[in-house]
Amino acid sequence: MRLRLGGPVPVRILTALLLDPGRVVPISRLVEAAWDEDPPATAAHQVRKAIADLRQRILHGPDVIITDGPGYRIDVGPDQLDVSRFTL
Image 1 (spheres, one colour):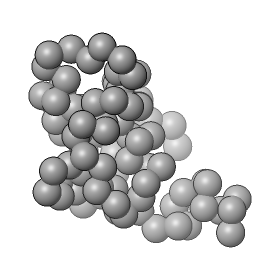
Image 2 (image 1 turned 60 degrees about the vertical axis):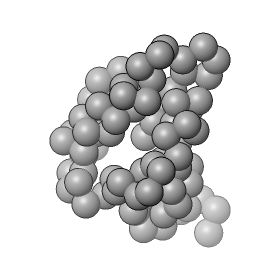
Image 3 (image 1 turned 180 degrees about the vertical axis):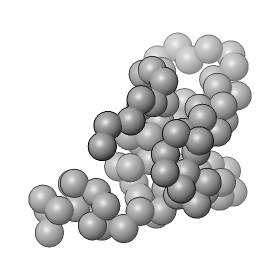
């Protein structure tokens, strides 16, 4: 299934979460993933908005993308990630 994620920023944020499943990814790292260098002054707010949007677009999004302390984590099983399937 192909999802429309709304542009490069949400894609980069989701990618950063999926590269570290089950672990908290701090907002600062998500900002870095989304903008590389020179993030906008509103970057942390834009990350929060992108997370809210991802939760709406992804099936069971609120149960999969969790707010946890200083950031977010994605709860997916190894059988749900292609990278896990190829490295097992």
